[in-house]
Length: 316
Image 1 (tube, helix red, strand yellow):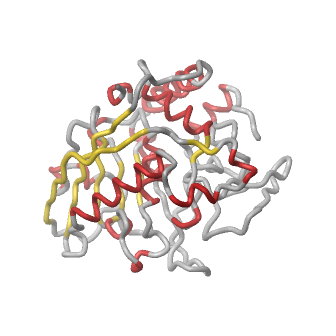
Image 2 (cartoon, one colour):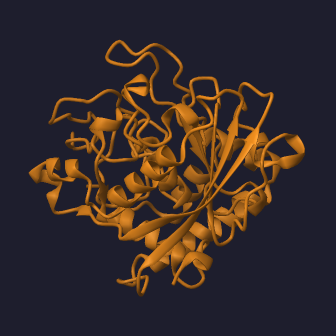
Image 3 (cartoon, helix red, strand yellow):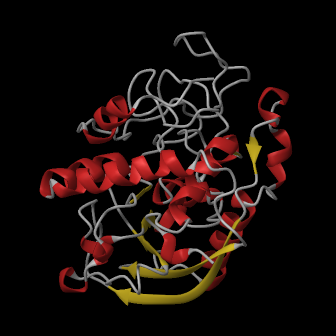
């Protein structure tokens, strides 16, 4: 298990413009594409456009590290109201209310460790497998017909003037956009510290909720679990670098992203050759291969909701 790195290294990791690999090549296992999350690429672009974002995120990181040392961080239950913005060009993209609710149900199960596959956690990680203890409530669904067939990752779907839908009360509600992203990207999120006018999570409509066998192996709603993890300040488990750091102390150091459903145990070749936590939601495995957060990730999430945290307005 790795230690949380020193502040200088944290700054280097946070504010270097390392690109998240965009997975669009064919997977030789069960899927035609590999999981593609563009959150890190979007962050790099936002930092390039707004140099002050790096300073804000550095302050958030320092606050997070301090808050994580103080034990229990949030009193009471955090309940997050969710607004889903559906942008559709075809009937298939105009996903049903039942499918939207299935995504909320998956988030509630995954963030409260009530998902059926949580019991599959290997004994090696059972001591750190976490119940994050955050619930989600669907508040509103907004729908808009559009002539666009794909939206990309430049936040156009979040802007009414560009044909999308502006977020609703983004400082107190989690906005999610369901639309066709394109480019092999399943979803992306905005990390804490970004502009409120673009805050939220984007999920390709094919992978939103329990989306059926046609979206296999990304049909179990775990794309949103992964992206909401980013929205709550979690990094990819491999730290977006070979043997990088995700700034969490109880997750093993990974060589790189994992795909498919790796056979357990899957050993890292990084220092100490630890068994990788491939079943963590912040890896790139198939939906059926990810089913846990760690206690360290839980503490990192909780730090943004405490008074003074980046998302304290959501706290109760």
